[in-house]
Amino acid sequence: MTVRPLKLAVVGATGSVGRAVLEDLEAREIPVELRLFATSRSEVDLLEFRGDELEVETVTDRSFRGCDATILAVPAGVARELAPKAWAEGCLAIDLSGAFRSVEGVPLVVAGVNDADVAAGEARGVVASPSGPVVPLALALAPIHREAGIQRVVVTILQAASGSGRGGLRQLEKELVSLLNGEEPDPSDLSHRVGMNLVPQVGAFLPGGSTDVEGAVGAELRRLLAAPALAATATAIRVPVFYAHGLVVNLRTARPLSADGARAALRASPELKVIDSPEERIYPMPMLAVNDDAVLVGRVREDGSQENGLDLFVVADNLRRGAAGNAVRIAEAWVRGRRT
Ligand SMILES: NC(=O)c1ccc[n+]([C@@H]2O[C@H](COP(=O)([O-])OP(=O)(O)OC[C@H]3O[C@@H](n4cnc5c(N)ncnc54)[C@H](OP(=O)(O)O)[C@@H]3O)[C@@H](O)[C@H]2O)c1
Image (tube, protein in one colour):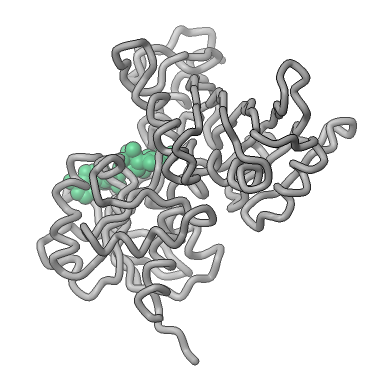
């Protein structure tokens, strides 16, 4: 049986996530008919895909006609405006912006964790992808949760500059060049310089002192893992790394699980690569995760300070796996569901 190509519109194709969507489609050799969109002010008119140059168009009301799905890799306000237009043409909107993450009736999906929930996108014509760090976190926690029931998670998110898109990448590059030339960089768009620094703020502060990014972690994990009683707390730090977020994870399970047992459960997941030979200095690092589809997990060990405690370190390419790869997999699951 020949499978017809996925008909996909990528809005924000010229951005960091949009370009990673093209890389993901190429790397996984997915049969696809693509339409690419950005603003009329975009600096980029053409993007290369599989050796061809594809035109980058401006969105109109009819742009989504005939498409199975559109990936909205754009600011939240733009996603809010475009999603209903897409659904009016029968095209599912996959929202990366956060605009729909807590909207009633919109499923939140990490492919490889709760794929079956994609079908519920039918209700509003939208499926939401979680915030970048939560995608690898949910993928790493899901096998442990199935094995031993996670009760509590404490996570430190080490957020790469590309988590803020092209702006974040340019800013860090400029800062590092200035610093290496012995100059203090111009004031950053990100409020403090990240170059040769650590900034304990990602997102806007909420009452109580957490940021919106930190506050969303628990709520998103509870939905993704179908674990309503799971407690979670997060601290997000901007680090001077261009690509790939790191996650320092401590957790407590309901049932005992040894480090070996946890590694075995993690190894059984096709989404994860367990690289964990610390004595040989083999463990996850951003430089190993860039352009990789897999979530890297290592430094798995028992936490002797509490009953049923485990520590691990997780790294994933925020653009390829955290955003683009998840959105493309959601589109694939949606089309598979429509064909059966
Ligand atoms: N970066 C990450 O790790 C990550 C992870 C998860 C989710 N996200 C979310 O994904 C979205 C995109 O992030 P990014 O990092 O790729 O940002 P980015 O690099 O700044 O790119 C933004 C893209 O949006 C396009 N755009 C802006 N306004 C538009 C409009 N009115 N119509 C059509 N296109 C428009 C831009 O096109 P022009 O070329 O015309 O400016 C550009 O292609 C954001 O909502 C972000 O929060 C990002």
